[in-house]
Length: 113
Length: 116
Image (cartoon, rainbow over all chains, first blue to last red; front, top):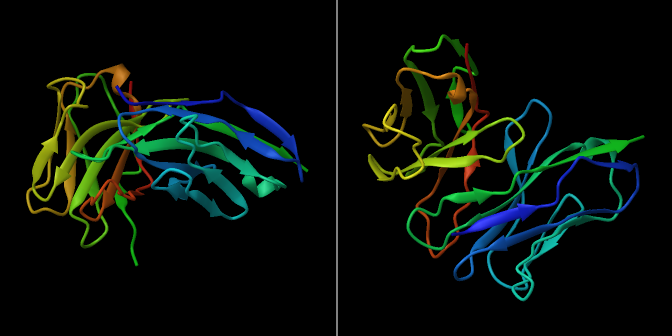
């Protein structure tokens, strides 16, 4: 069945460091891919998305490229801030039927000043 | 505009009791989803409504769990004879009718259920 695998956390970085959070998926066909972020005490928020191969989603300095050949959707940011500390979830949406999301287990990011 | 709202935000109950969790989706969103997020895990799908009907309830863990959406808007997740293993955050999400594989879901803040 369809699945999403994320790198395990927690990830601890200093402010202004480069961030990569790996995400790979298994799916039939070409699903839509998402990164959601959950800040402390808040609900899930969409960070960025990509709907087809080679699409690049970007938002708030974060980027992720839909790589069909490696079935990956890694999240990157060139210079993290303390305010980026949160839990990040990679997810895919099936192409038909229910369009339900399948989430990874989440990666906790802590950015130190 | 208003986002997805869920009530209560926290619910503490005793083992064996019945609970109801409510979700108010974004106005005009025909699709509604329930997910369950256990500690340290990603959300897991429970049930999907398109309008008033449950189009997919394959994620419900057992027959103690049931959900309704009688008028195609507000939904209630019902859990009978709660067990300690039901403790989790229950998330609701809504979206416009999914088309062509693209479906952005908007999540509520969740209800944290604790079964003692």
